[in-house]
Image (cartoon, rainbow, N blue to C red; front, side, top):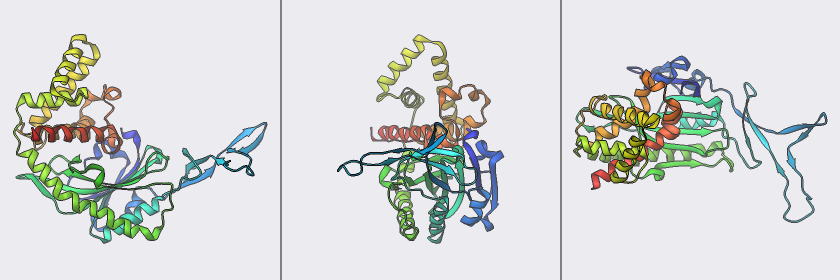
Length: 358
């Protein structure tokens, strides 16, 4: 949802980027000739840093540190402290973390992006989400390829960090379909194509160059693999019935077409709001399969891209979906890239590949 976006910057190149559907009032465009990592950081208003401070509490008008004290002379005893992560610009509280938690600064994220730029990548978009608990940088990395004639995909690296102790620093491969700007995860190897760095170890600035080479290696390995997957899906025919069962499995979170049919029948028999939501989502996915940008409703690739367009783009503009956001729980840039939306894309790919192998 748009309220999850604090600030963003993007490179001005051609038409509007896909995320403007969510972030138009909080995004700043930067001309490509000026889009250095430092300039992008400034435009995205990400000059602030996370700060780790000791938590304290007030007891009888006395402020005490939040420390679990134990007898330090007794073997095996520990002394645990509680800390808060805050923003250096506003002092806003982000999360509570433990003693071993190590910050990874925004400056280091953009230093990593700069190292990647030196290796041939280009920073395309960056921003802060959810009050600053999540920050990211999206870099183009590698040559574009076609799933089918005229259907072009561009490979990207998504650098993603959190300041709330919930996730590691990550570098993940993704692609963007040019015709509709859907973001897609179509590499077979999954986590093998993801670089991670825990927040419980020292992160040295001098190691970022090594990290950059490792992250860029993800794109090199993943691009050819993604090309093969996309072209295979685009060459596999799909009927209206096939697509209906595919969408039913996704929407009911079932493991087989038979289970999906049984679950749909059960929901339909009960009626009410659940039936309405299921029918609306199914109808929209079927419409996107035929009439979504770049789709013609004849292949598994069309079915898969109906799902990605549904998550990334279409519902941000369709007023009839706004009433159902709390139930769909897939809206917004945050979900599309990092949360339930991305999980649904991965499941859609898994189901699509199962259909190809059948």
